[in-house]
Length: 480
Image 1 (cartoon, one colour):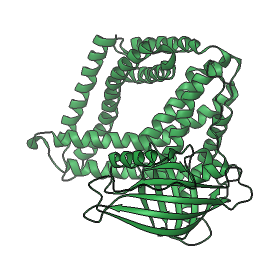
Image 2 (spheres, rainbow, N blue to C red):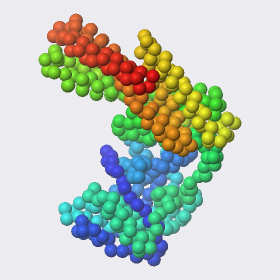
Image 3 (tube, rainbow, N blue to C red):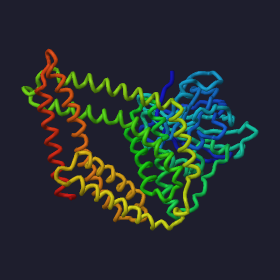
Image 4 (cartoon, rainbow, N blue to C red):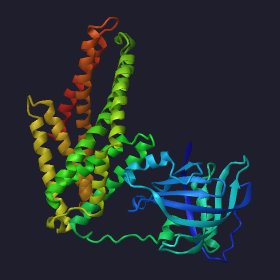
């Protein structure tokens, strides 16, 4: 069994002669308890350092009150820590499975071993709840192959369940006044390895601007992988990152080697479809549940709500099973391998050596394509599919504006705002189209089933038709 919590801590470098100040810095602190531990932590990674690249640490710790396995995942300004109490030397299966997408089938093996003598100061309030723990650590690196500092002293301040950011700031101020300095290393492991922030050359060129945007999407996809394996519903944000990545490869196609871009796009189309099957059902469930709940009671004939819940929940569960199966398959792991290759060495062409200002040319082209499709979709008698194609073009245009925002500035901000408004309308239209198709099929079945009635489905279907008509009129008025 494992437990998971969000870790929020600050680290400080101190000298060997540093004297820890009085930690009773806030009225909420009633008691300070001090304990001494001898800890030894062995860190694990793939031979290529995949965990390190994604700012993930995996260690087996002996000694102290939380001995066992610790997995730390980045989470904005904090980290998610997963603890497995196992004392075994092999990586626990649940952690190995959780990291499958990051390690992509590689074996996790020991890399660095660190010994720490810790003087822990537990700060509790009047209810004996922990507000913070201040750890004064003397650290020794035991591995012979570590490249960084071999020995140092540091102080960590970690918030407890009863603490808040203000307390963290107050303690930090007290430590700085005593001579502590905010640490430049994010972890003991980073300091032992001698990690440095890599240079990012070429950012005056279009390649640098595009790569910055792509890097954000790679990171979002890998974070989505970790979240989904932890049973966190990250389908939407992962799908959006996939769409942004695919859109950029297409919109800025001249910047990439065509064969490499085609290969990546094919795989992105595939995984977007697998993710989309789940996401679309989430949207449909919310939409139809709300629609039924807001109907007058006399308009709801038969077990409509139950039928919708049963049908859509089953479809969603099946789609989610297909997603999880795909995430454990060779094709998906190969896609993550391909994304890592693009992250490290994107297949840019000579066109990417243009100045950053050239991004405006690609944005303008995306806008023209979007407007052309929108005009065609708003022609009298145009099929519904054309409005959906216009929506796709609008998204590519908006993503191009996002990428070029550092160059276009306020002009880009205004374009993104207007594009989002249009996207919301076109999204409402497409949701109504999908919903209407489901209602039509369910209504036809209900009309011929004993104990059921197709009337309510017909009412809901008429509402969706009205949404489609209203949206089309609004788009024609405001964007036509």
